Amino acid sequence: MTYIVKTNQLTKVFEGKEVVSAVTMHVKKGEIYGFLGPNGAGKTTVMKMLTNLTKPTSGDIEIFGEKLNDHSYEVLKRMGTIIEYPIFYEDLTALETLELHCEYMGYYDKKEIAHVLDLVKLTNTEKKRVKDFSLGMKQRLGIARAIITKPELLILDEPINGLDPVGIKELRELFKMLCNEYGITIIISSHILGEIEQLADTVGVIKDGRLIKEVSMDTVNRSQADYIEVIVNDGKKAAFIIESKLNITNFKLIDDNCIRIYESTASQKVLSKTLIEHDIEIEGISKKTSSLEDYFLKLINGGVASA
Amino acid sequence: MLNLMRLEMKKYHIGSYIKKAVFANFVILGIMFMLLFITKIEGDPGFDNYQAALSIIDSAVRAVFIIFASALIAKLIIGEFKYKTITVAFMYPINRKKLIASKLAIVVLFTFSAIIISTAFVTAIFCIVSENFQLVSDTLTSSFIIQRIPVVIMNAVAASCIALIPLYFGMRKYSIPATIISSILIVGAVSSNTGNFTLYDIIFIPITLAMIGISVAYLSFRNIEKIDI
Image 1 (cartoon, rainbow over the protein chains, first blue to last red):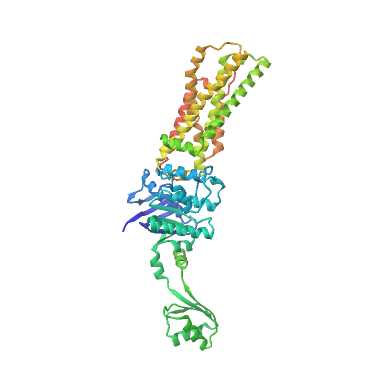
Image 2: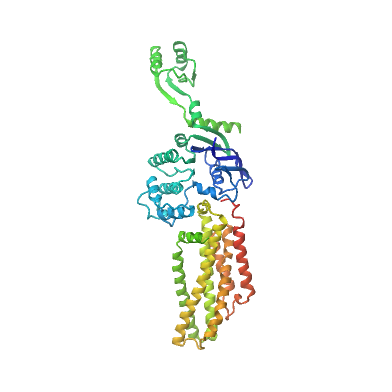
């Protein structure tokens, strides 16, 4: 397996407090790695260590097969990053920002600037100073800057902050395109579950500085069973009917009125017909898919319980 | 390194600083003539020869550009840390030490050239005007001017290094006011001209201060590759 980023027991201590503890993560080449965790969990610190801005207290990082040290500068050429929030030299215009960035990175294809501004949908703003940009525009310019040099690895810390729903959708598609068409590996952090769920191939869940789970979305999806939820007036009676008349045993009585049926062969139509025939009043019936949200919350809460 | 300096200058629109430096020259000239006329009206003899006048021009130019340098340090270095733009700069595949060194080189070279050019410019205008209108009583000789050239160059070298001292105060808490105020205090100490005498005239003092300036610059980026941003 080719890993583009590998960390081993990565730990960072700030003023005696361990903010990142023994994080061992693996990012495969060409995938989108979702880095998920609540605010203050240590996502940014890990990302800063991956980009060599912050130095680990212990443990090590391997990027593109090379161990990162204080003098690792060449690897930075192959990365595009946004850390914490997009930071700019605010007196420069969008065009100057990208031109200077290319020069510092040693990238000389000036035609790419217009193309990349178009990709992030920032047109007619070349002459505008960055300090007059809204947060959403800054975020887009930050992404433009990160991708302009066609890096092999993109490290994006909360890149959708400050964007409207349309913008979020556009960028989601852009990230998928970059990954699929250009083969760029993307590490993307967020505290918004839905975003990671829609984007990531692998998810790393971090809490209190610890990577509590690293799992592929395929595995998560397979483990997440769908169920039918029925709200009735008499839960116990309904449960008896479901078991005796429909021969379904894989269900759970949640409370007096709510039943969840996990049996995949159960049909809503047959279920409602049978219940009504036996004088059960149905207030609601719906098919539900438990999402990454449930999975994540279970993980986080489990973490709390065991802590 | 030269390319890095070029990029840094482009990044900070160094042209606007050149305009400000030109403006400062005219302010110094204005003050010089004002001083000249006041001393004439009051009949103060202290300003009545070129030796004294040129020494005041030296002090004034030096003072202005040491403070000017602190503004450059604040913008090019302290501001990068304060406004976190250093995270952008340190994400480039460029040695951190080289990057900071190029910034310091800009400050030193800018200060040095500004002091030399401004001293020459202000002195020239002052001498031409006062010769034509006989404002200063003694006569200006070419040997006197030639004698001053090495002095001015040495002073400019020392002042450009002294100008780095505020870096130390500014870097402590990434404070722009601390950078500028410390430069004003340094100028106040070494450049206040009392009876044609400044602390700067004791050769030991500018040399020591210049060495402190160089050490401060060295210490400020000695460990730059190890620090967390």
